[in-house]
Length: 99
Image (cartoon, rainbow, N blue to C red):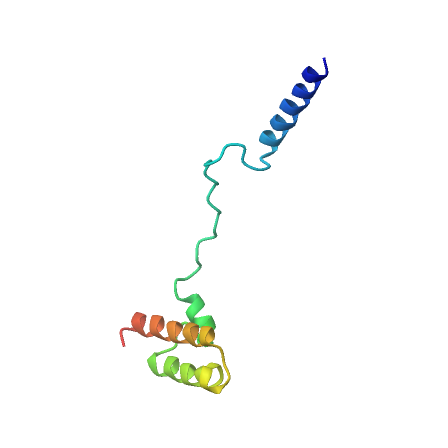
């Protein structure tokens, strides 16, 4: 009698977990892909890193890069990761302008 009660409780608990989506009961069950908002503009992040507007030309991009790299370069006490981000932003924007 007690085993039937424990079995009913276990089945009810597992069903409740499945219904509410808490945890995966079967190993190897794929997780749903996270929903990401579409990017507003492909180079908007690069422009935000350098602090230039959408109408900025190659010379303005280079000037903003020089200004930023002087403060974030590892030789001047900055971070290698920030240096990579600033350089990648410059390269992406210059590639887009064709220069």
